[in-house]
Image (cartoon, rainbow, N blue to C red; front, side):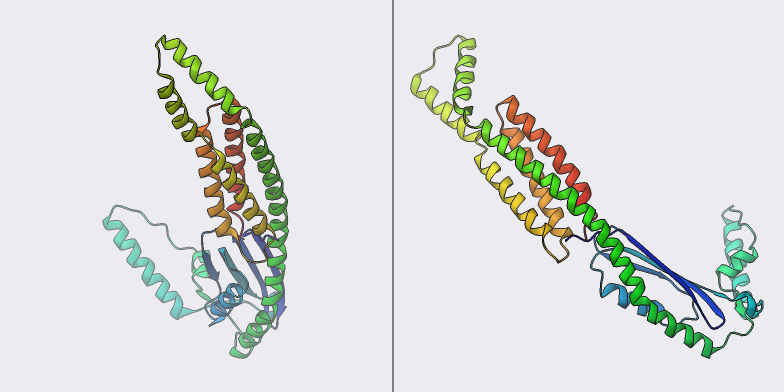
Length: 293
């Protein structure tokens, strides 16, 4: 069954003086890109989260965020004077450099300072911080399980869509094969009609040679065989339990290549119409495949 790269999971709770909430979101990406937003004082938790995520996710752009606030009943927060001094000094340097370039910088607000961790909890202590670290570490597997469930649900939808598209592709391939039965006779008739319009006599032997060359150039048997092989390969990928998004993406390129060749070598309106319909279907499948892990 396919797994989508799109998914979301979130959890929240409390530990000692802290309220916390963590969230994991994922979208499609060529490789595995994990970004974390974790409070600075939770030293090492971002690496712990990265390791847990990468152990279960093979591909996608993922954003893990953790927010921790002080419980209301636990009192107020106070300014970290050392941190505040550093923030203000950095802001002054930025404003001064910006002024030399003719750029105006807005003054810092309390929310800006809070975003830079300019506040600390009144009764924050290492023991409470260690406790919340252990609690959050224990909830990580559950968060990942929810995330995987979300991605597999999306993957099930992709599976149904791609299965239906492959069935339509098989139908078009069968139609293309059916057009080949009388294609040789039509090809010869069209060729002789074109020569008749030129009102010139052509040596029968030379005529036979030219017709044979054109027949070989317009033969699409190999393209149809390869398209059938691609359908079979895609159906195997649909049943695979391993991440198959990259292989699917490559296979869609091969599908498109054969459909293009089918259209370019076609000498009949019916076969060209089938090839164009197939190209539209392949483009639709490629869009869906971009979300497969």
